[in-house]
Image (cartoon, rainbow, N blue to C red; front, side, top):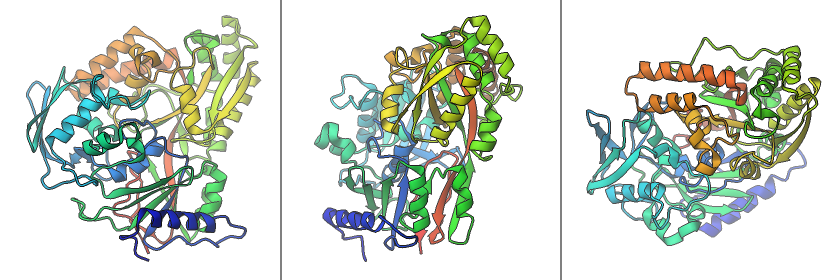
Length: 525
């Protein structure tokens, strides 16, 4: 079957047929189409607008539909050219001038040029831009240092920063920096996220709500055409169902394999991929009201939870216990002097007694699954038991991923005492700057959902991001980690080694330390 000439209706029929074959009553009954990769995703995407989403689940689609000015070199977090072929940085570190690639068009046929780049960043950064409103929590924070973006000519664009900003190029390679078609945004307005148009190796074909997102090969892609004819992303929220579909042949690639299921794929019919990266799984604690407003109670929670047992028994060794807010994957900025909070229930009980918090009742938000969430229901249940063992009563409320984000991102004040969370980041600046600063409280547009505040931490983070000396940045980040470790705004649980499994027919697939799912060079026999 050739998919290059399939109409949108044809893709719908393909998807419907594929879904029908996946309703299996016996193993190995499904067979995915040739030239088409079927990916088992953890959830329905929130949107396909890179300026509107925050979750890696959505990024896994976006990175195949769009390009940025720069991208990460395969297998690294080092930046290389993409839609920009070169750039120059002024001596004071505040002006970046990019030379743009010739002959690139968006999927809708409109031209990629400097004015398109200006449109994208004005849309993110200017409140008065007609298409600025993309939802409550866009990641435009990544570009808060940008003062202006100007088109010098059709193929030259200049970014002027309000101060030196060390993570700027790395942030441009992140999905928030992906370039969308201005013409498509103008045509679809708030519905652009359902009608995406980029310059990437695959172009959007169809979105069947709660069933599949379909993308097809972009012929004439500037970096060489994709090997696949199409990719179908299926949202399968239940991990056990994803495992069953993978074993039965209903999907070709599965992300976030439950640790308990990995052994089922250690045969010739499958390939398991693993990749360490900058990941942190943690519990946000409500530091504004309730028991966790007292640092001693937050520290008690860190002592009460047996993180070694979580890593070894629940996650079956697919992660390491975390010591603080910075993942060890950022070796140059990681504070090796810090040790994880040890499992010490007696210490936890003593701190609770000192704070007068014995027998406190806590509400705990848990998700059914989400970006890097590490078997969240099992983890949440084990954490509930550990806290109960030191006298705390924990009520779990479980939500689907997008609903969960809608409850957590606006802040826990008045709603919950703790919530699961996971971040995959591109720079040691990203997570603490967006989720630990006082100016990152939800009512200020950030992701500090527990309302933690420490002026010294704010000062260190602000200083680190403007330093052009990496050794100085490292010193500042390491001092920040010491303070945050002691303040315990989170329970620091685990750093995960991501995984995925493919069928033996899939060739050329590798996981990236960025946690993106890059499929351009993937083929299927």
